[in-house]
Length: 119
Image 1 (cartoon, rainbow, N blue to C red):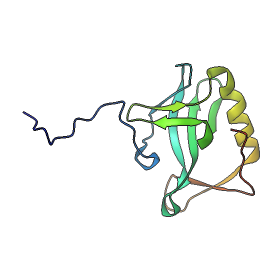
Image 2: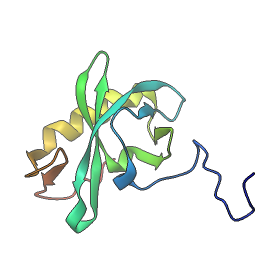
Image 3: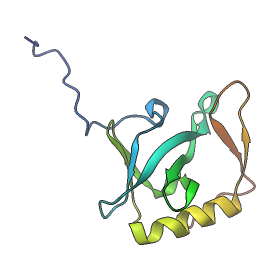
């Protein structure tokens, strides 16, 4: 029997981007499931979170900027954009960013010329 001090974990508990795992579902602001996380875009050493890579059925592999992410829970990444806006957000992000694989891991880090404030 758990004591009062034991933490009961719920799928709705928010987590850090650093705890996000591949396969986590991605949900739009209107509740539509649009894919699964394939990787996290960021730099652990600098604690910089830039977004996520998502496997989407029709669009294939796409990138979602951090500004389009409302919150991350144990069960899902919840976006701040609707399903209708999803394709445009990922297209704009992919066209304006260049990324390099981070040595020794699957995480990626963006090389930013300037910050994109549109999303």
